[in-house]
Length: 300
Image (tube, rainbow, N blue to C red; front, side, top):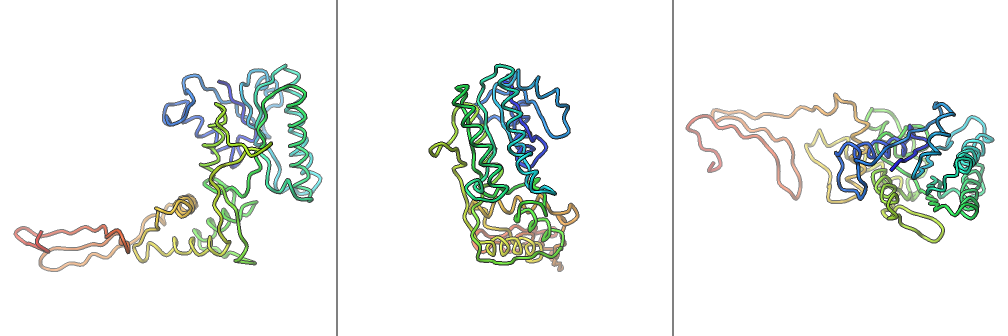
């Protein structure tokens, strides 16, 4: 299966391409896709335009993740979101290729702002393309996506907060009561790969990631501050909570390497030493207990 990923160097594109290559190399085997028959075509803004013709001719599935989020001029929204989608679909038609096409849209497509209007125009273009060609199309209106490799100070508050808190930089929270609907990038990638074999989740005309987390902005910030304090109090987060686990994984991806090392206190006496490394309120502790020859400590 030949898979074309446009916007391959972007946040979602990079995560998707990475996992597709993991499948291709046999590192990821829990997907209903054969890695031995997988080939990934990566296309981005710096690619040779001639490559698009070749990829569109040979693609068996297209993930269109290319788009514009923060242009210098608002007119670039329509050019980057609608314009490229139009070029992509015209190229597929020129090559006579009616393979399935997925497009990355946004929940803001329901809003009347320049970004939402450009996303909605791209959606409508794809629906018209489906009627004209009979191709299977998948339109995903993603809410806020968070996870590793997301660019901070760009279009994700979670990425900005993770980066700034991990690097001792200030953050600004205008309204901590704002409620956010979030999807984790690994869940997005799992959904998109499932779509390759027809396993996408549909809600009417649209497709959706089935796992959505709802939390206030203040709740996110509180969790991130608690993560930062953990090396000092030797605790770990409650990884039994799915959102906490995903946010902690995201936070660690922004943590400088030198901060993965933190001091622990070794208590010594004539019997040996005791060093506590991790403590939890409900799961005990992890420690190193050294006893000198012939010494019994705590009936050990």
